[in-house]
Image (cartoon, rainbow, N blue to C red; front, top):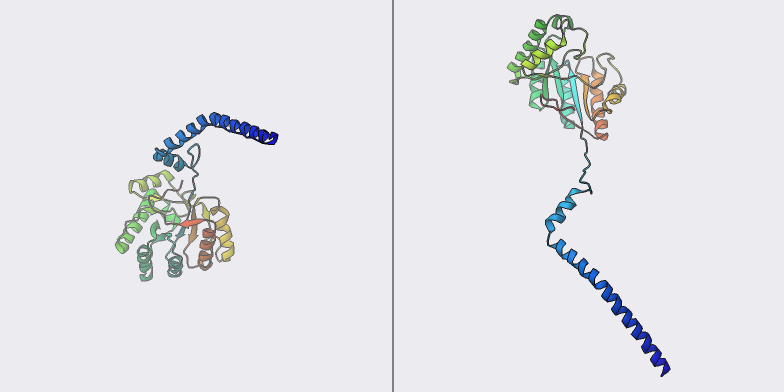
Length: 264
């Protein structure tokens, strides 16, 4: 009997404790339930918060890396093979050409345009002492090339590269005069921020050419690479495919230069 009374007393104490805990927890339970129900009634708000990604709404920006392969001084005896490589690699490039009147060169101009590359102006003669002797000679040479290419391809070229670059010391007139003329004609000029130095050190091994290019190209998210399409630059041709592969491995895509290209 005593044992039964003792067990009954323990059960009574336990029951009273549970009742007391329930009374104390009930307000919090009701409040939590109320918050849940209110949240369920506002799904749009929840979606917006989830869409922000971070507590302060900041989003990580991924900068796209783009390489612009540019080839100066063509067409050459290697132009066709160069275009074959670019087509196989599905890469668009930019050709700053000079004026050549043979039938093979005329076909190269057309093929550059037909295959989606940019046809750019370099100079008709590429003879520094003539084109840079005066502003008038500079303008006449450039306009001769622009007109010549238009008659062959039907394209009014609107990008240009100064022979030797805009920092050349060969100009006998202020650079500003040349820039003003280009602006008036709706033509934009491009320099470069990486170079193969293949017109200075001709017949360099393809690995050496790649090393020169990558030394500066990998420093930029938007890299404009100077190479040459010259008869003497056979090793440049041999460096193009492995250079494309390496730049892709480094995360670069490829594009051609246009008047509207943003490089900043």
